[in-house]
Length: 169
Image 1 (tube, helix red, strand yellow):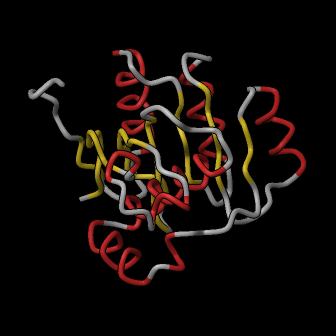
Image 2 (image 1 turned 180 degrees about the vertical axis):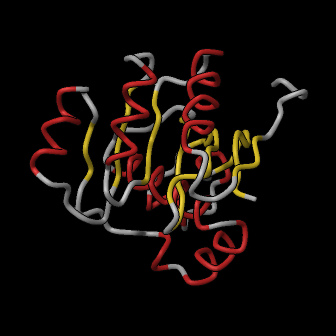
Image 3 (image 1 turned 135 degrees about the vertical axis):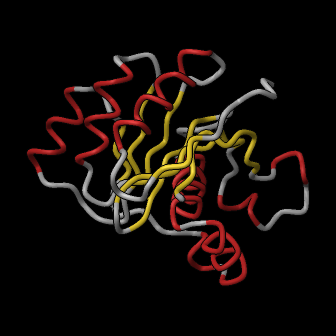
């Protein structure tokens, strides 16, 4: 682990390009083969996927359904789509409130990883991206956990933040 890692502090909703660059840099350092993005509308997923240029599998997780044109663009870029997702962390009040205290982006990123892991799309450490109503602003390297493992007492399968790449200010 690089102890000199600089955490990027982003102005919420204004610096998605800085976030994209930080994510691409971290993926290029190695050890990350999957990027999981919590995205309501999906437009930023296209930008991340284009910037990564196939260097990592991109998984887009949403509780909604994307438009057909957006789905077509994502599939062309080989983005794996998870639509109409059940928000497992949302169902656990204490966990939801604790993560919200960090930021909406932390909660969204971790929730997307849990959903992706539950679908078999994330098993090794992944780079998770999330945000809030103002856009994507958080990037974390995360050890994935399935929804079932969230309530399990076996710590080896526990969801864990391994690195913080970017957080909102």
